[in-house]
Amino acid sequence: MTEPDLVIDRRPPLRLANFQITKQHRRFVEFADAVRRHRYVGVCYRAPGLGKTLSARTYTASADWERWVSRRYSTESTLPASLLASRTAMFTPEVAITARQLHNEVSTRVFVLGADIERCFNPDWDPFDEPALENETRTELLIIDEADRLKTNELEQLQDFFDRTEIGMVLIGMPGFDRQLARYPQLYNRIGFAHQYRPLDPEDTPEILEHYWQQLGITFDPVSCAETANTVTRTTGGNFRLNERIMSQVGRSSTSTICTPSAQTSSKPPASPWSSAPDRTARYRARNTLNKWFWLKFREAGAGRSRRGSTPGSCGGPGAR
Image (cartoon, rainbow, N blue to C red; front, side, top):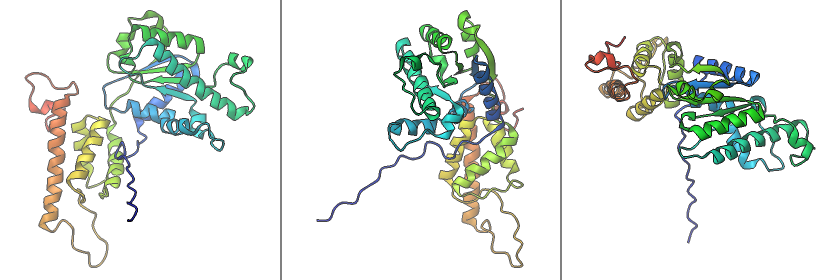
């Protein structure tokens, strides 16, 4: 009897492509650096799906932190350079989190990261030594994602933690989160920066589409695909999450090129892949799927742009402004 083959069960990747550095992400980096440098409370807010969480995870190197936590007690492991450079901890609270749980989670992440950074500069440092406990942490910034979930007690707990540690703090929330904080004068008075994470800039869309299509094995021609990029920008309204979903839909619909390839320079060019009827049908089907899927999703999402009694063009169609 032969031994059965071992089956490796691997989850599919979380996203189709890695996060791309855009103009809005660079603005978020400037905002986070300012909060970190001046040790203020910063607020970042805007509509969902624009990339706030992805920018925060990229800034804090959360993927490296998650891998480091699982093997930080190994004798051969060293702190990743990305965590040493960012010196930022990130936490996403649960919906029903209490003030005590929030304090335990936040303080653990901040002081564990600070202790690991301290050991890089002082290998003989003992975190249980009393003089060491009195030193300030090496962690310089704390980012709280989905901060609009927090109630009064939890916000007051964050204010107390901010006063005791004197590190920068960034609160990420939905639109209107800044007005919600105005009801808490003590915390609101400590806010030094407010940043609106805006939709994706049109000039960043071709580069992002090119990166997505490379992952799908699709040829991208900036000249012939300019109309497609404009259509994607107009229909999604710069929503990063909708771009991810539509690219996944395109990958399931067709594996062929959806833009006309550039002209061949050889003396006897090969037959164009679009000359055959099946290839043309696949191309048109992918393009129609793209337009229909975007139209339906944009009408469902609304994005706050559609109004009662408006024309179909106001939902992101050909007549959108």
